[in-house]
Length: 162
Image 1 (tube, rainbow, N blue to C red):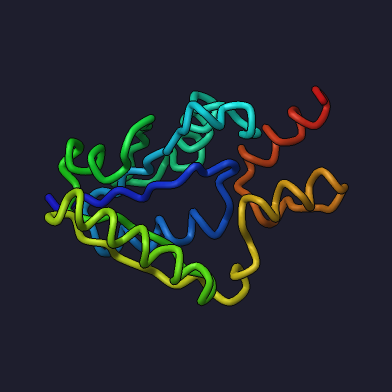
Image 2 (cartoon, rainbow, N blue to C red):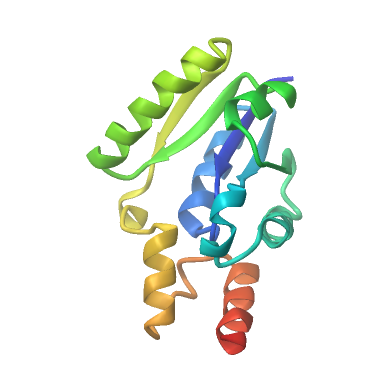
């Protein structure tokens, strides 16, 4: 079985993330959505790690070949532990490539057996990032088409709490 991990903080998970994951699933038998959590940044997240895991599980419920996991450590090491042969990464622009290239070099040094697979975002989603989503949402913009339904509902609850 060919397994890939699709890592990210996914705070929040966007329709762009889902699109990349679904396209990766066409290539791999199983795609593990790997929630990367940095305990030092816990206060910077909109959703804590457990919430992000539950929201990812809800988002991918009903799709075959998906699993959700979490790591507080090195993503590439967790991917190896989970039996993955590749990490999936989405690219939106040239600036993403530069950052991803550096990450690729580090990951290749740490775990040369794990390949990196890059999927370009669709043009209509190229501006969609978790940071942009949060900024637009808390400024009052309608982002309901830019995040999966469970995410949008959870964000509405967060906004009411703040």
